[in-house]
Length: 459
Image (tube, rainbow, N blue to C red):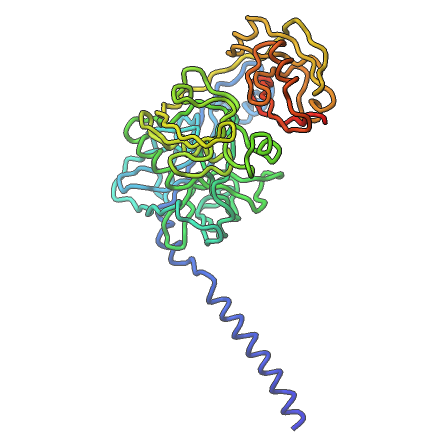
């Protein structure tokens, strides 16, 4: 009896462990059918690029000796650069712009080992997307999904060619949506999907699938300190990508909505200084001359809290909405101005090419540091003209409260406590009217960027 009673609990526990293990395994997704159905529509992309050999290049000369007569010194062999996927049976393929950028010849290899030379139909650097085409028919294709309704925590799967290993499959979950990754130009028009799917060099341009086998994104980049996968990867939402595809098919270029404002995040101190209950919205630090925003009545210091009915919690959300708006159409904006909510109808323009902006220079008529720790001077007419502003003062000394606020010598101040500052006299009058102990916004131009900074007035 003693042995029997001791064995039964052990068997019960073991059986429970087995059943639990089986149950957990049953809960995990089976990707085999998804891969079998979609792998034929995923392609490997490599390029050939011809570069001119520099005269006197000792390294090139060294290798030339091993090529023998007729060696091609101005030719770089094909390199596996990335992935792509077929979106139509007549040969249209979607990939990343950086995969095919500056290529002299693009080679596409299918799952069945057929190889084609592709031509670029159109490319868009702002979204890092390219539409290419091969001369073929009856090709396998993928189905497009809905990235808008994708939820954080959902399973997703990638197929691609990391490091040239064709048709590698990796899986994970959606870690976040709407991630902002500004480009080198400071632009931000793609609300990236963040995942923990293993993505490495060569996966770029490949599809990201949902469990239903439909494409929800295009794998684009990773966050890494080593150059390899570290658990954070980003994909372009398929909804955004297909809008780009349609325009590339029709015109070979992409038109985006443009408002014409420079914006910044609203932190806790700025929210207090502007009279907001909590930090949210996009703070307008500058309105571009002759822009849709100027025509629509938007002012520097306005906080945009909604665009076409969509609330804006973070400033990075605004470019996503504006960029997808149609040029020539009216958009309804809700703003906060001097603590009051206002609705504005603004006709959206088309995003122009980027232009360089001048850097600030010195002026004259210095004023000694004020109670807020700022010494300023007037700007010359030439200086104002170069900056494209009507007024403002240049900071020659910053200490105490101003230094704590992050204001530096060389900054140009154009607004203080939501009041325009034309010159040093204006500046002095505004400073005298500042309530002691209050937190006030200061609009400064530093280099090429206007920025609001919260400054605490001494008691």
